Each structure stands twice: as structure tokens, then as C-alpha cells.
Amino acid sequence: NKGDSCMKSEFVFPLKKDTLFYVQYLNSIHPNTCLLLQEPENSLLQYLSSSCPKITFSEAKKSDFSKIYLLESKFLSDEDIKAVAELASLQNASVITTSKNRDRVLNQVPNGTFNFKIIGENVLYPFKVEEQLSTIDVPVVINMGLSHLVNKSFTHLKVQAFLEQHGIKLVSINHSINNQFCNSFDYPSELFSDSICAEQKIRIFNSFLKYIEKSEKPDLILITIPNDVMTLSPSLTSDYGTFAFIAFNAVEPDYCILNIPYEKHTMSFFDSLIPMLEHRFSIQIDAINISNKKILWSEVKHKSKLSFVTVDTADINSVVDHMNQTGSDTPIFYNVLDKQRGNIAENILLNLQNNPVVFQNTPTF
Image 1 (tube, helix red, strand yellow):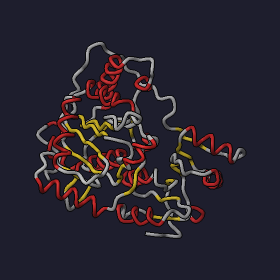
Image 2 (tube, one colour):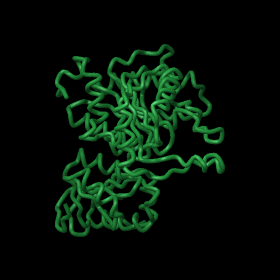
Image 3 (tube, helix red, strand yellow):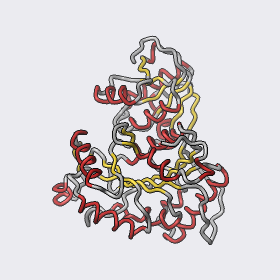
């Protein structure tokens, strides 16, 4: 829907390739939100129009608004920042953003009057690190990626929105750049310190999860693991799967999602990959999500550079359908929420609905 005189109270900016999933999530929890758009790419508009049919596009100058969610994006130019800052100052609107974006706003419009709400700055969690690991008594869903650019954040946000819309009180833990716009907790900063050993980081993460469980009292905890779960080549190590090692030793998950890049996968590929990862981390992989990115292995081999190409949806659906029809023990998905082929979030509920405390009021699929 496009409206020139849409009168709404909130805007989200910018609509770029690296903010698309966050815009979708914010629209799902703020259905009256308009998008502040400056000539976005047609492909993004088409995708968002089809995936969020209730979303509204509006010209900011013709609208009355009180808030701007200013997301971080590598495509956000100084001109964009200046335009948003001037509009916010003119409308006396609150700017909900990060400290990095705040500084960019003030650099572009130093004399403007702004009411900033800064998220994700100096977050400290008041929990005590225990020597003995505690059992986490609510279901834990872990979302992980085999490599970069496998749409982990997309998977996380779509599952989060779906479960929240079905009445699940969920705690989200995610280290992505715009995570705290989407009601997510970040990881304790100690987990990224080079001066703390892996053994102590396991205790820290376990104590953090127990603190979250007690303080938030969620029905379910959804965690996305930073970095990759394994090394793709000697030159592209991605921390050798260290963060996954820490996470899986800190908590035993009830459901695991593995996001992988596209290839013309065969059953032998899954027959070797899944047992290897399950043995390595002592877990069970419950669902696989194939992304729309294919690794250019020639670039990896000759240039030690991880490069991708985007794959057509029809090709991915062909692989997904073939693998599921062949009889894969682990369900395989694309797009996370697919009405024709089922979806991961639905599968989570089906797998965990035997827990009567958490899912007694949840619809049966």
C-alpha cells in the first residue's frame, strides 16, 4: 500500500539490504509503523510488499510522526543521516538509535534539537558467575550458521515474530548489529574477551542464561550463535567454531536450527555433515534452513576470500523438495516460513508441545 497522506506515529529508516529483516520484524510488532523511504530499490519494495501486506509506505514530509527507529546500515550515507536528522528536529520526534548513529546525527546537524533514546550502550547484566553449571529449566532453541551470509538473523527474527504472535513469552539473545531494536538481549561482553579462557566463558554464559530465566521468566529462550560453527578453509577459520563450543557446553538445547549456504546438496552431504556436527557438539540438529547464497569456492581457494552469489528461489525449492522427498531424517526448509512446505517455527512448536507448562495454550498444528 502506498499513501501520500498517511498519518502514523512511528517511522523506520533505512530500508536497505542489511536492514530488511529488522524492518519486517518491527512492522510485525508495530503494525501502525510507516517506513521512511528515500527511493529504495524496487526489489526491496516488492519483497516487503509481498511479505508484509499491511505495511504502509509514506513520504515523511507529508506525515506526522513522533518516533524514528534509525537502524544501523553500511549503506546509510551522511546525506541520509542529515535528512533524517532535519526531519526529526522539525517534528520534535524521538530518535531511537545506537550511540554510533547518534554521533553521526550530531555531526551532520550540530545545532538540531533531538530527543535520543540510545539502545545497546554499555549494557551490564547483574548476575553472579557460578562455578557449577546450572540446568536451564525452560526450552532453549539454538540457531546457528555453517558459514557467513546464511541468513541467520532472518531465521532468528522470523521465528521470534511467529512464536510471539502465537502467545509464547520469548527471550531473544542475538549479537547482530540491530538486535536490540528487536527486543533482543546481547551476549555479555566477557564472552568476546581474549583474556578469558573458554572454560570460564562456559560458566559465564550458563550463569547469564540462568539469570535470564529467573529474571524474565520466559516460556522459551531463542539464541543465535555468533560466527560460524566450523572452519571452511585453513585461511577462513571464523574462530574455529569456538563460540558454538562455548554455547553448547553452557546449555543443552531442546531444538537446533542449522543454516547452510546453497549447493546442489545430495543425501550423502547431509549424511556426513549432520552426524559430524552432532558428534562434535553433542547435540541433535532438528531443522536445516538453506539460504539463497552459494559460496564461490574458487574465490575461497585462490584468494582466501569468502564470496557468494545469490541463487534463484526456484532452484532452492527444487533442492529442498528433492531432499525432503528422498527421506531426509532432518526436515529441510527454505525461507523459514513457507506456507506450502511448512516452516521451522511451526516445527519448533510441534517438537516441544509435549511440555505442558509452556505449550498448554498454544494452538496445535
